[in-house]
Amino acid sequence: MARVAILTGFAPTLPLFRAPLVGMLRAAGHEVVVAAPAIEPWVRERMQEAGAEVVELDYARRGMNPLAERGVRREFDRFMRDERPTHVLAGTIKAVCHGMPAAAAAGVAVRVAMITGVGSVFVRRGLRWWIARTAASALYRRALAQATHVIFHNPDDRDDFARWGLLAPGVPVTVTAGSGVDLAHHAVQTPNPDGGILFASRFMTDKGFEEFLQAAELVHREQPSIPIRIAGFGDGKEGEAFERRVADGARRGVWESVGRRHDIRPDLAWCRVFVLPSWREGTPHSVLEAMAAGRAVVTNNVPGCRQCVEDGVTGLLVERGNVTALAHAMQSLMQDHARTVAMGRAGRARAEQVFDARTVAQETLAAMGLG
Image 1 (cartoon, rainbow, N blue to C red):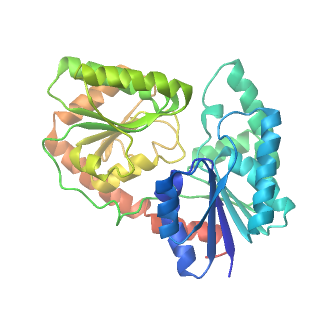
Image 2 (cartoon, helix red, strand yellow):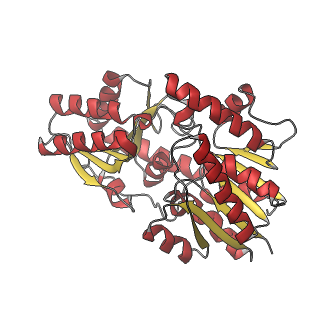
C-alpha cells in the first residue's frame, strides 16, 4: 500500500481536477493526502468525501520574494516529516519548485512533477516579470532535476521547458490530455435555443478577460438581444478592478453576472457558446467541461487551448488579442443555432475520445509506478 501526497497551490483545483485520480487510488487500497494553502470548507468536504485526508499548508501562492520562499520550503519540509508519503504528485509552480526538493530531502522514492501550465511568470512581459521569470526558471531547473517523472499537459509546454533548459537529462517525461474531464459528472446537456454566451473563469488578464469584456461590449452594441453571462471572481489585485467593471456592465444590462460557481453545470446547460480567450493554458479545464456538456467553444489559437478545440469543428479559434475577431466569432455562432448544436455534438465526441479523466488518471498512475 502506498501513501500518496497530492500537492497544489490552488485548492479549488483538487475537487475539479483530482477527484477521479483520488478515487482510483482509494479503490486500489492506497492512502491519499491532499495539501494546499487556503482550503475552503467546500473543498475540504468534497475531498474527504472522495476518501482523501486534507492538510492545509501555510504559504501565499502568489509572489516570489526570496525570504518568503524559504518559508515556503520549510512548510513543505514540515509536511513531508509529518505525513511521510511514499509518493508525491505536485502541480502548480510553488508545489513543484518546493515540493520536489522537499520530497527528495525526505527520501520519498517517487516524485512526480505535473506542469499544469507555464503560468503568468512565463506569459507576461516587463521588467518585473523578467525578474520573476529568472527566479522561477532557477527554481524549476533545480526542482525538476529532483523529480523522478515530469508530466506536461500539452506538447508546447514540454518543448518550451526543454528549450529553456529547465528539464534534466534522463528524467522521463509524459504528456497527458490535461487532467481530463469527468464525463459522468459533466454529462451532455440538451441544446438550449434560448441560451447565450458564457464566460466562466477567474477574472485575470492571462485568461483574456480584458479582451472578453471588450468583445462582449461590441456584441451587445451590435446585437443587444444576445444574452451574455459571466461566472467567476476576481483573482489578485487586478481582479478587484475587473469585478468593478463586471458589476458596472451588469448594471447597464450588457451582461448578467452570477458570481463564483462551485458547480458550473447549470450555466453550461443554459449557454450555447462558451468563451475563454486565454493567453496560454496547460489544458483549460473549463473548455473541457464545456465540450463534455456539448457546447460550442470559442478560444484562442495558443498553447493548451488549440489542443482542445478543432477549429470549425468543435468551435472557433481566434488570434490572441484580436478583440474584433473574438466578437465576430461569438456573434457568428450565436446567429447559427444549427452550427452550435453540431459543434457541441462534435465537442462531446472529442471529449470522450481524447479527454476522458479516467484515461488521464491511469496515465498519471503509470507515471507514479502505481498503474
